[in-house]
Image 1 (cartoon, rainbow, N blue to C red):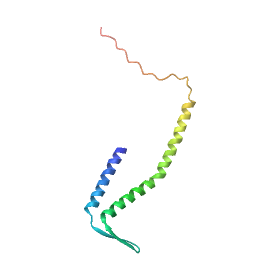
Image 2 (cartoon, rainbow, N blue to C red):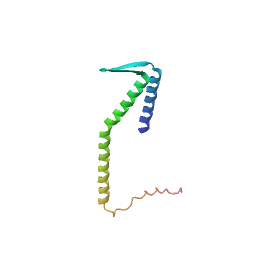
Image 3 (cartoon, one colour):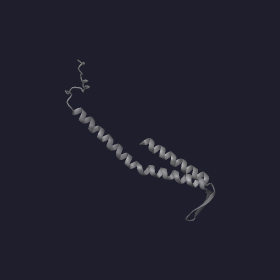
Image 4 (cartoon, rainbow, N blue to C red):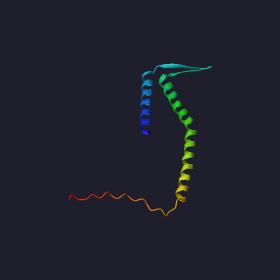
Length: 103
């Protein structure tokens, strides 16, 4: 799954870069009383980078929650393994079926 996500991310990054390079004309940005003129390449790449950073920041709480849950479940598993009686025989491979030689 991680490889698929990485490949999709690379395709998206390449598409954004191609779009930005093909639209390199100057644009005027206005926000309230503030205005600035810059290349559309810069605007597109900065907007994509800010979107990636924002998405990463929004995913952090879930990542921390999952990490904490994994740590808790690992401790529970170790406690269960420690409470298991050690007198159980070790698992062995099943014997191969014996075949009779032809008569």
